[in-house]
Length: 92
Image (cartoon, helix red, strand yellow):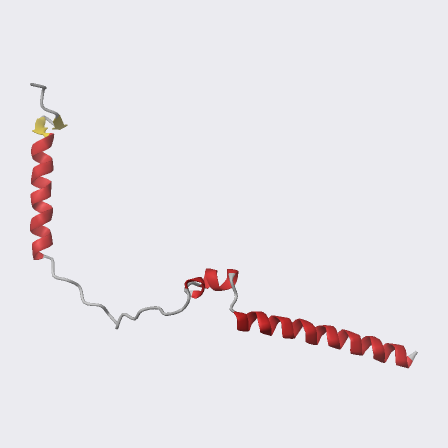
């Protein structure tokens, strides 16, 4: 038979197996007395696509509407540049 594993604290030696058993019992007793904590607000299921659930994902994978808006802004900017170039050419 092997020698029992002891945990030493100060001048005292404790059986490690016995300490683990006492801790398990302590945690079980605590779990029985612990009341469940109610939610502060109604929990809802997030029905957005997985790629849109966090701000980082929304930034990495913009939605189709965001892409369309960006494309419209770019084309409007290009049209303004063309109009300005045309106006400059007419003035000269």
